[in-house]
Image 1 (cartoon, helix red, strand yellow):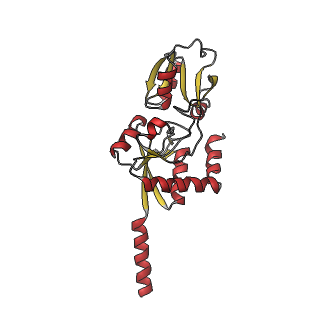
Image 2 (cartoon, helix red, strand yellow; image 1 turned 135 degrees about the vertical axis):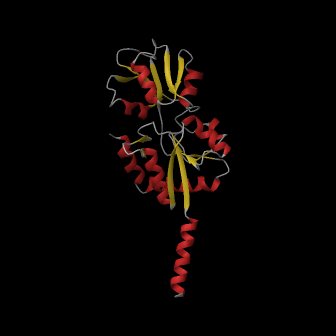
Image 3 (tube, one colour; image 1 turned 180 degrees about the vertical axis):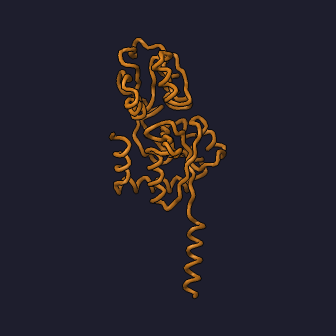
Length: 240
């Protein structure tokens, strides 16, 4: 009887101490995050978060949040989430505002246009997702273009195909994902590298006070890279 009681108490204690982590993301950014036909958020970032949670014995939850509200919400401790995983580039400016995990994905940036319609030299306007480092780069470093922000890349694609903008600038893999449904689009120019804005990798962001959470997330990221789970997820989403 005592053994059964002890086992029950340990089980209750384990459940009570189990970590619950709510991740926020902007789910219109495939292959990193998107919504399936069942209304569920799926994608590379979701699978990475779930794999990390499994390693650190935590339970994952996910919620939708506009991208430009992710970091402000973390800073103020609002929004009802503990961390943000949404293809967020680690930058020096952002690292002053929030804490980042180790990088879990190496990013790059590119321009796309409608085939035969525009190139970098003749283009006059560029679409970017609002609140992103790509918007910051285009505004500060590509001043030859009129920069138009969009809530999502999908909205920018519509304007690009309708001739309202000449280019879109964003993450290379996200833009490549668009080609399957939009075969009339293509990359223009070379990939852009500027570590002030991107190419430092994507990280999971938290409020700066959550040092223990960052340590746990880093352990999980390190573990899935070492045990092969990361590569499985990468192959699933990034090598179509």
